[in-house]
Length: 241
Ligand SMILES: Nc1ncnc2c1ncn2[C@@H]1O[C@H](COP(=O)(O)OP(=O)(O)OP(=O)(O)O)[C@@H](O)[C@H]1O
Ligand SMILES: [Mg+2]
Image (tube, rainbow, N blue to C red):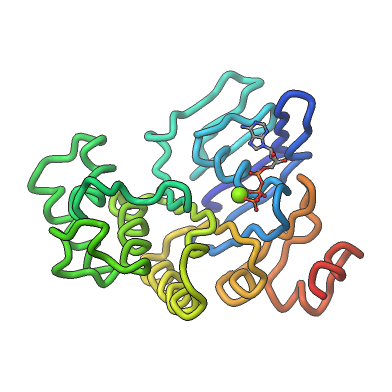
């Protein structure tokens, strides 16, 4: 079954037409990158999928269920969507230790204390932070902090994980390692991922498919080799130069 369907998603901010009919079917377990230059609408698209933002029109379907459609007044709230988020701007909370940072989404869902303990410890293992649960964020490296953010996105076992430029704070070497680690975790957990980046290398090395965006429009969707070998528009040809 498809994991997620975006059907003719349009978004206006005031007069500004930001997403101009966005269509996408994401398969279960797929890793999809949204690639495009600054301001093209990548974050807006993720925020709509997460429910932090509502589209002006169009329909969103997750696991066969309509989760938003303004014309039909359907809107499933973010916390009910089984979606995890790792956003660059939502850095981890400095006043909470690693355990509490990761436990937060479960506390909101009123998961029992024992279950929280088990799940946080399991997730620490997944992101290879075993033993660091009592550390404060300022006692962690940048890469470790990013892993805490990743663990927080994964801990509630979401069906879909959204990542918005999660590696942009890291130096080149660590970025390369985290690219590899995120992809491996995604494949081990078989989780569907939507990954926003404006870094071509990131998109081309991590993704099953890339959605190449330009100014609120999808220029091309395809596997990395497909896009590289057969750019379909002038914009894509130039973008890849
Ligand atoms: N809350 C808002 N109100 C008005 N305009 C907005 C709002 N959020 C985003 N925009 C505008 O929508 C457009 C798309 O923004 P978005 O954040 O989706 O871009 P992006 O592709 O993620 O860019 P970047 O790579 O710089 O993060 C931009 O022109 C932006 O100024
Ligand atoms: Mg953005």
